[in-house]
Amino acid sequence: MPEQHMTADAGQAALYRALADGEHRSGPRGTIAFAVSTDDVDAGAGDLYVALGLAKYLQRLGWGVCTWPTDRWDTAVPEDVTVVVSMIESFVPGLVPAQTPVVAWVRNWTEVWAGLPYLDQFDAVWASSSAARDRVAESYTGPTRVLPIGVDLELFTGRRPDPDVGRIDVLTTVNFWGAERSGTAALDVLAESREVVWYGANREHLPRSARIDHRGRASFFELPAVYAAASVVVDDVIPPARAYATHNSRLYEGLASGALVVTNCADGLEELGLADVPTYTDGPSLVAAVGDFDHSLVDRLRAVVVERHSYASRATAADTNLRTVVDEHRAQPRPDRGPLLVWATHLQERLRKAEHDRDVHMAGVHEINERLLSALAAVEDGGRTIAARTVERDAAIAERDLLATRLDEVTRSRAYRLAHRVGKLRRRG
Image (cartoon, rainbow, N blue to C red; front, side, top):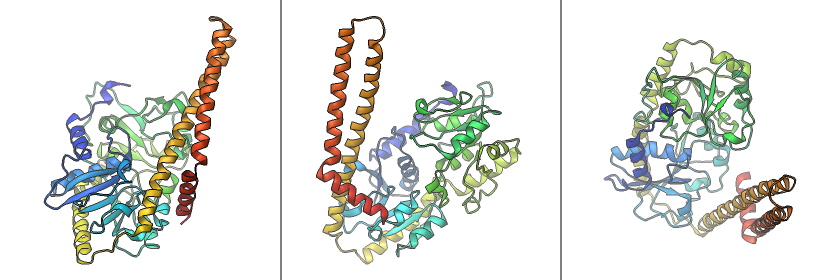
């Protein structure tokens, strides 16, 4: 990967780590705990970066901020937490103190959020679009408001690299998690006529055109330089997000960095003031969308993002709402969460851990199978004795069978089966 595109802002990275580690936990307005998937800023978890982007500016308004990652969800939230903001639909608030209000931030997976049987346990809902807000309001009677995600303008500044460094023509930063995305085939078509650079996780598993320059994952703190080097950024919004026009961070970050962002989700752009963002549905329309464009369009779109979609402005709106939620909760306290919700919280975490164990063992089985195939192939090659290679093969078979047995034990356990059934019922709503 070219080093000039991978410069990270060490100062901002240190600040994000300090926020994640709870070094800014105290503030005169109280403490906000963000329920997130992880507190590891190097893990590539989008929910954490959104939480920390908002937290950074809420802290400047007088709030103390901290994270409450999944490995703590099976323990009680501390009594001194003023309010919890849940970033994840699987967070069950059974272990949140009765005096602590909880806000749900519906950034994606709107249907799942709307179907939660414990949705009424949240004191307020923020949604990333009007469509998402309206869907949640069909099954939630509490206060809802639109609060899209945004961009940290102190990170994504729009500073361009040295002109002698070289530029990226077309860029995407979509990660590959095993499922084919709608934009992938379109990028293949685009690569026939434009130079496409792809930064993203799991590039080794992408059976894509050799014309695309796959460079692996860029860290969150390297993305500002990556976007600043690009002329065009191609976004790919997943179907559950497109259904409710809940746009990706990539839209705001790319535009803030001075690139033209092209997306496959036209809905919701007008609501954001970004109706002029080009859109595509397939390869030919993507080719047309990234064609020659008026650079004044990029300037206009960036100006909208700077004016309306920074985390500084999001924090101002969130601050007002959070203070209202806290005041109303104090004026009319909720009863205790109740034993059923506490039980559901513990059961959810047992399910999460059981599924994690299953995934770990499944990955182990796949790895051993690959080693087994290599050992079998080696028997046919020259080199060491067949007996030595046979020993390696037999060891690989034994290790694979041991992992497979453990995987079977995990998935057949009473705890896993019960938790899995409850999880399926919850998702069906």
